[in-house]
Length: 335
Image (cartoon, rainbow, N blue to C red; front, side, top):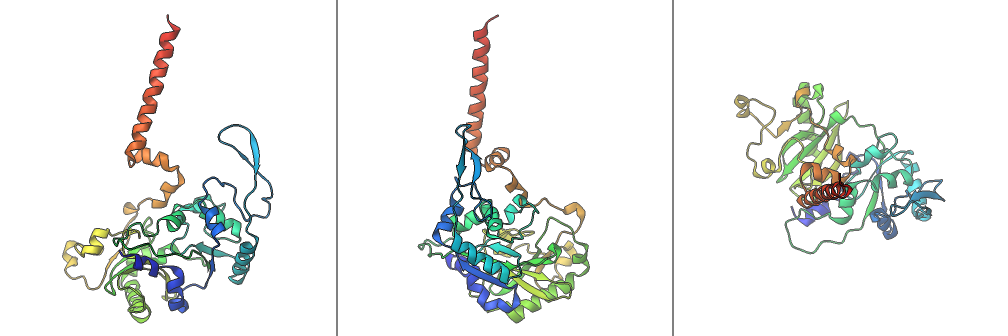
């Protein structure tokens, strides 16, 4: 994956090219002071609310309470609210690439639907996906060229009630769809198996008519939505690489082309024509959502999974120290 591919997947790059095939959206440049606020771990108060002139927060270092003023961005707030109103009053927010899908748990309605800048800030400041966009957008790129300059933008998309079972991810290599995956692979949707051929045909027709050879790169990942009438809509573009979720495939399969088969028996594999189409075939194969891990502290997750050996070592040292203190206390007390 090259840095240029990541740049080309920015919303403001592809939206003008495919505007009539996707959801109505507005793009606003983000001032640097807003970016600084989003990256500031110390600022826990959410800015943008109507009643945040004085909010109380307890300092971790002592029990004294102090009033912390959330930074205000009046001009940016006005522009955002005007855009939200133009889009009908409810929007789906994202940055240049990512949406805060890992932070929907923190919203009162567990939804990414936003009606104000306050709603957006709450999601953005709670999202690792957003932090990745702001700090490491070229993390998995293979080229050593200098990182391109990124002008960060707030993308506001008109809120639409999309049915998760109608979303699909298409993997495109050399301008050819090589694989299609159910987007919400954590659930089993019976209609997908019944309509597999029509879904695949509709997606491929949409790709040939509106996407193929129109996108700046020949390798990319395409998210689409097929509505109840059978029409296919463009949802998003993603880089063809590990930074993008491979869902029911693996990146080894996608990059090598080996074992790239659909939900078929071994006998049917030889008859496969077209891209491999995978979906969750039964309730037995349902998997937990990968976003669930973002609902617990990262340090705790690292300890339980063993992903960070240094944290585990520190934890064991701490436990050993506590045991030694307890033993010395018992010896000091005597019989």
